[in-house]
Length: 458
Image (cartoon, rainbow, N blue to C red):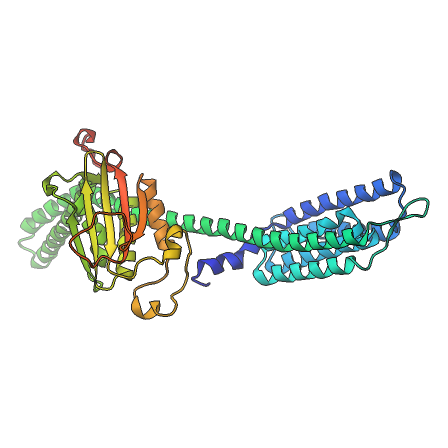
């Protein structure tokens, strides 16, 4: 399977449609066609080739019945099966229009329906094929058709100008709605996949956070039985002084029990430390987020903006969303930086601000308004491959980071160093991308009054 999410969407989207849905839609079309034929004959007394009309409607009925009895209700259509169903519907409808006046028939507009559905659920090749065939059919129907006749033998048709207008309107509508339906469906599918990826990333971060609690609980629960084993082994060592072989085994048991105690002590300390660090100073959270990228060949600088006292910095919650979101933002800066990035932070009574900048080329100007959209780019191209060897794509990572941070109440601004509306520093090297993340202080700050009783997880 391809690693490109857009290809994943393209390849699997047609498999979302159930056969039962296609059958239900076709039954609605069959009922509508029968009603139109009945009204034309009984109410307007039009002369139409009723035998051939019923023949093509009957073919649609037979196709529906066969599909109902040959396949299970939960069957999902493949790309090829969806294509064949769409072609069948298109030709069946075109045959009825041919028998009833061609483009003089106002129902000729229904040719658009199979095309729009195909554009929404089929791959690009299949959608283009359906669209091309529909345009050919509409063109043929503008010239060749069986005219509608009244009961008195008069031919019902509109002027050639209006026939041409109908043809042009259908062609333009087919092209426009096909493109619109496809782009809209792609946007929805892309956003759905990106949100799914966000949930996976958040779930992974949450599991890592919860692991410390599990370790602490295991160390606590296993401590008592290990102490009993150690005590019993010590008594056996004393009682077996006259049996050297058995005494040696008992001594080995005591040594291994001591070893298990040391391991659990170490594990328990790590787990308890994690439980107690549900909150941490702002600088510590930033250090934790930047830690995986410190040894990647780019210098990571961190400093407080302004004349603030480090001792007064707020303690914030170590939510997985915050850690993972900041980590992705720092990763993106490291990927695009030439030599260094800066992670600066500040606070006041109302807000907490983090600014991540680098000395790279910055965001492309035409992409600034789209920063944070998923799958903006899926592959490295041109000079990016040589200049940014650590770069693996732009779009999904930023989307995940932006989504996670916004879930915690953050607001984000993206800019370049050359035009950023930010506080300038003495360094003129910060010409690359800048992302500024701001929270209301009350949203993420941990306060001492919120501390509850110390409850051991079991």
